[in-house]
Image (cartoon, rainbow, N blue to C red; front, side, top):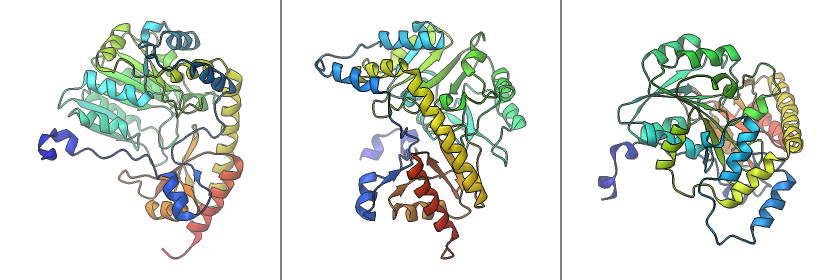
Length: 370
C-alpha cells in the first residue's frame, strides 16, 4: 500500500550511504573504532565553541532566530557579502535540497561531475530531473571537452564541487573559469566549496566567490562549518547567492527554523577563532601529504587531494577491503559509482590513527586470499 502512495521518483532513489555504524563495528570487531568514513575533523572545534554553547544552554526553551541574523552578519563580514545574500542551512546539504525544490521541474537537466557527491545526483532525481554526470580524466583531472559538451546541452542547474568529493582534486582557476563562462546564463550555477578551507593554502586554488562576484547571472557558492571548523554534529552550512531574490526563493521552501540556535552560536564562535582554523588546516595538510607519499610508495594509486580525505584505488573489490578493515575497527567508505568499485575514500585523522589505518590497509592489499 505504501508503494502505491509514493511518487515514482522516490521509489527509484538510491539511499544515501553514511558509512558503517561505529557501534556495530565496535561490537563485531571488539576493537577500538577508528572512524574515517565521513570527512570529519579529528582535531575538534575551537574552544570558543564550547563556551558559546554552554552559555546558550541556559535558554533552550525559545525557538532560534529564523533568519540567523547574527550568524549571517558574521559570515558576511568574513566573506565580504551583505547578509541579505546569505542563506543558512541545516548543513550545506540542506541548501542543495532547497535549491532543487525551488528550481527543478520534472524533466529538467542537471549537470554534475563523476565521481561526485551522491546528493548532487539524489536531490535532482527526487524532483524528477535528469542528471548528466561529466567524468574526470584517467588522472582524476578536469575534462574540458566533456564539460563543454555537457553545458552546451542547456542544463537548468549545474553542480560543481571544488575540491571534488570523493577525489579531493581541485580545479585550477582556468578550469573553473571555463565552467563559469560555459554555463548558460539561463542556468543556476552551484559551486560547492565544502572543503575550500583545506585547499586555500595552495596558490593555484581559485576562490570561487571572487570569480563569481561580478557575474550578472544566477549563482550560489555553498560552504559549511562541518569540515574544517569541526561542527559536523551541529549541522550548519551557508550559501552566498548572486542576489537577495535567490535567498528569498529558498526561504519560501525551507522550514522556518532550519538551523537551531546552538548551531548558530557555535558557528559565530568558530568564525571568531581564525587561528584554530589555520592550525587545523596546517595539520590536515601535513597528514594528507605524508599518507599520500606512503601509500603511493607502497604501490597504491591515490588521487591528489586538496581536501581532508584520500581517494584510494585498492585494485581489488572495495567492499571486501572495507569489510576486512571493519574487523580491525577501522571504518572507511567503499565507493559505489560505476567504474570506481575498487576505490575507497578515507578521511584523515590523527597521526596515530592514520598510521594504524595505512598499516592495516597495506596488510589487506598484500594478502593473496582474494
